Length: 383
Image (cartoon, rainbow, N blue to C red; front, side, top):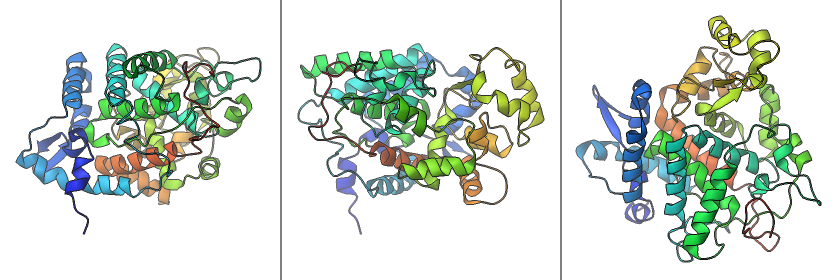
């Protein structure tokens, strides 16, 4: 049997003790409760989360003890994920112990200013990792030697949050008194913090750290490797498998669409031509997404676009996935993908466990840890 004491010493309090509310005879995560109070959440709610998050102090109650087993199981599952031997969650503990708290603070302030930015930071990490690995290449501006990924079709006038990354980099380098934290690690940490802030501490996980930054970028690779919103299920699965990910990773990581918005241009064909769509849902979207024009008009990816929850999966059950690629995950035919969507739709902790595991797995893809990489002084250009 594995001893639990060393495990808890290595996991911050925010991950150890979930915020649970009692509903009848059951206990559910606050993130689920928030769905019912979404319209009333405001800046004070986020500040309350921030206060608990930064202090790492919680009172152990009977409610917490009853739910602790769930978190232990989830944490153990995370620890068993295959990882790059050169990455460790304690990479900055000695060289700059204040690095992670500073990143979290900047991310929180950015989310307070604009809720949508959490989804943007999460998406930056996805788009970085899916193009030649998690190496910060998505942040590079074009140079005379290469055309970067920012102008690739999936990213052009779409990716956001670069200014927040600059803000994080400036703050952490100032605190560490030199460039110590890579831009690639900043993306991984900011994505985790965004998810935990917008979803609750049961979505917190240890980020494996020690990545170095790429010295080049490729627009062609971005155009080839990032799955577009019109992909079929078989195309999505093939794309994920090409990156060393599996079907569960596909369904779990697609849950990142629980936050954020999409442009009309990315779902127009679905709402006018798809048959696997709720007709009332499609009609409501057509009001703000005409057949011609309005390409940049936004629609939420699920009913709670500023909160990490499982409403994304519940929408798929009702044929209300915003993107064609989203709805491809669920067709009601009893497939493995269907079963996972159904599980996540009713079990927030199952989703949280699998999402965290897949995020760590994705974050390990083709990382650079040797002298082929560097620690950039400016995330937008090589040293």
